[in-house]
Amino acid sequence: MKSIQLLFVSCFCFFSSIGLNAEVLLTNRIQKLIADSRFDNAITLIDSALVLEGVRPDLNTQDIGPQNLAESSRSNVAKLFAWKGASLKELYAFDDAINAYNLAIMLDSGNTPRYMIEAASVCKLKQDYQQALVYYETALKRDSSNRYLLIEKANCEFLTEQYLPALNDFRDFYLKDSLNAYVVKCMGSCYTKLGLYDQAIELYVKALTIHPYDDEAVLSLARLYQKIKDYKAGIQITESFREKDPANKGINSLNAMLYFSNKETEIAVERFKSCLEKGDSSKFVYKNLGIAYFTISEFDSAKIHLEKAYQLDSEDVNVLHLLGISCYESFYKELGIKYLEKAITLYEPEERNIAMVYKNFSEACARWSPCPLEKILNATLMAYQYNPKDANLALSLSDIYERLKDYSNAVVYLEIYLKDLRSQEKGGTAVNSKVKYWEERLQKLKEKAALAPAV
Image (cartoon, rainbow, N blue to C red; front, side, top):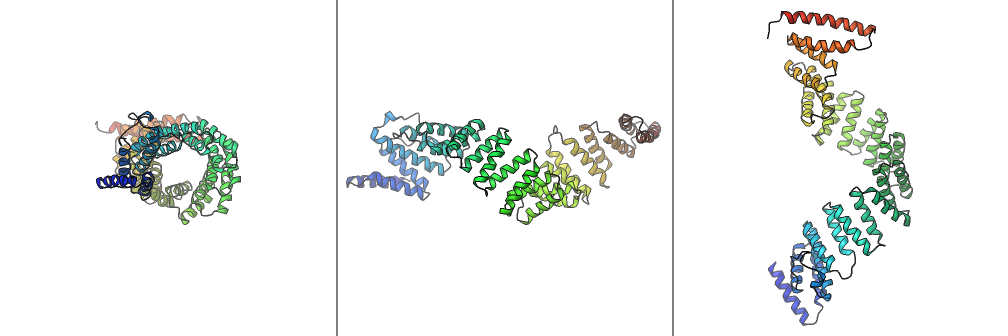
């Protein structure tokens, strides 16, 4: 880099001495280095140029102000800092890039928004949309008629969840250009976030009248129909688009999901299978095809596709839960236990579905004949702990304790089950018959408990 600095200084002095425009030569050289992606070299050259202008390259906005430089130098130094910011941006040195652009903004005698726009672009790369918004707002004060700035400001407002201000800015643009499909869709997104679904639907429909082949508008509109549970409308709009573009993965998978949501499961299965045939091997397709098979009790097929989804995301507890059930409902009972055990480790103890997972885990253990009774007992106890109102779990515990010859505990849980049974439809023949049967069983258990040696 030192050689580059020396070369620059010698060339600068030489060209100046013979009357050539050194600034033009410098500009061309820096721009060529940036165009060739030689950003480190460009920064070295820029820093050398700043030194010749009497400016330290490592300055920040606290060290410099317009009053520190002659009027004739400020514009040139601003341009140098802007180029430095552009190079630092490409090197992912975002904070340094923003500092360089801030210096360019302070020194820019033209008072134009160009450097603010560049600084905002770096903020967006950092996902600092709030700071980007500040730059766009300031830039708009300098150039209030710039529609690009208005759109970027609105986008940043949307990304910082300021949906009403974003909507107002998009609407200002829309009043001047009502056929801009992008702005129409953005207004639809704002209304969606504000929960005003009817207005959002109206705008997405308008966007599609402007560009009938806009799959983003179709997806947004169909998802809105899905959200308000108007599945038939969602099916209609996606079916119409599938005729124009039968290979669109997003539309095809959403179309399948809408059929599934509308309880047209057989069609949904065929549509999800078609997605796979057309090359969509996403987790979404595998997972929901597996769930669709699960819904119609085709557990072997459910297992195959849920396992594919699991391979794509091993932390999805819903996939693990249904996969475990599918395994024990088919021929893979021991495997079902393993999947359900993993699901349990991923659930937080307070999650509402944990009781159901433990119940299915205990069922899986009970269905696998080599499973030790102690493991079945522990699984069922955990399930009962999370859902003590489930009388059937109490009955299962009574049965397990009886098989373990722990008759005292068998009595305790059978009494809990009987109490619940007696509370159901008093006087009903079926209930009375069941009560009588279990009362007789309870009596026999009490007799066994009385004869059992004390623990």
